Structure formats: C-alpha cells, structure tokens
Amino acid sequence: MSIDERLAAPLQLNPEMCSLNMGSMNFGMFPLAERRNEWQFDWEKPFLEASRQTIFKNTFADIEEILSVIGTQRGARFELECYDVGHIQTVAHYRSRGLLTGPIFLQFVLGILGGIDAAPEQLLHMKQTADRLLGRDYEFSVLAGGRHQIPLGTMGVLLGGNVRVGLEDSLTIGRGKLAQSSAEQVSKIRRIIEELGKEVATPDQVRARLELKGRGHVSF
Image: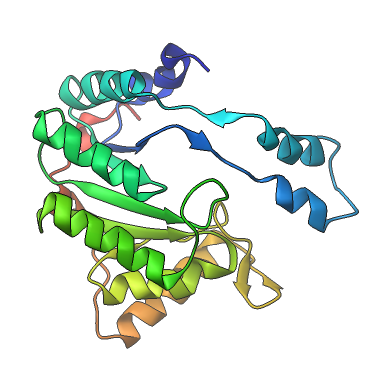
C-alpha cells in the first residue's frame, strides 16, 4: 500500500491514538502454514506462505509523514510498535528531533519471526534499552505472540508496564485451549493484574496519562 492509502482511514476517522510501526522488517508467518493440513478457506495457506517474500515496510520517510500528518497536524498520539531494540533507537531519534512530543507510549512486540524472540531475557533487554535511551519519561506495553501472550504480559505488568491481549496475537486462553473471544483473554489478564495488587486503568485515566485529545475530537 502507498502511504496515501495507509493514511486514508486515520485521516477520515481522526483517532485519538493509532499504531505506528517503527521500522521495516521481515514479518514471517509462514511457519504456521507448516502446522496444518486442513484449511477452512482457500486463501489461508497462500496468505501465510506469502510472508516468505514480502517486507513489512515502514521507512523513515513513511514514519516522518505519519508523525506529521496524523500527529502534529491532527493531534493523535501513537502506539509506537517496536519489534526489536533498533526500533527503540528510532523512537529516541525522533524524540530528540522534536517530531515525537508529549507522553511516549511504546509497544514491545515479541515473538514475531523477523523480530525479537519471545523470551523473558529479551523483554528485559527491550526495557533496559528504553530506559537507557528514553530515561523514565515513557509508558510501555507488552505484546507477545501465541502462547507467550499471558506469561510475558504478566512480566510486563511486574516491570511497571501495561499489557495487550487479543485474538490478533494469540488464539488460545491456556495450553491447547482455544479462546472464545478477545474479551475472555482480557478478563483473564485483568484477574492476574488484580491478583498482583495492581489496578486496571479506566478510559478516562488512560486519556489523562497519555494526554489524548478526547472523544469529542474524533470523527466517528
């Protein structure tokens, strides 16, 4: 997709916050095709196999245009998706240039083939890199693919961060058990968070912490 095609939806909807990947990378989903012999739809296996030869594109020029058009001009904040430690360096670069202002929200993405692997040591490495480059002036969340979703998300909470769960990232609710919905995964991680003595933020609290522009300034 061209940058204009990618920006069409956020320009129409004018969101409070949207995701922004902090670099181009190989994004390999093709190993999943090797684990199945039966498919529900004809497009599923070719879709996964295509990731062998496609690049998840987000150049510096792309990032700068999105920061300008959606951020500076429209007042949106970003979920800055970091699939490896080099992406955190890109965040630090744009903050130093003044293109990223206000609260910084990092999403540590672990477990995608082509990015950093889903190991506790790697999550610590991401956190330590962010601390070194950004100080304490940032928020972070943990997104771990597949079976690592809940364990590494829990570790992220213990490290003082936030957590993302949902069927986009994992289809299970426990070992060998398919989740019925994203809501089921959200309920599980909420129980864990509260058992750890933490509190789940309300939407209004999140808007205040991240200095979002508010529901009254979107187009949906």
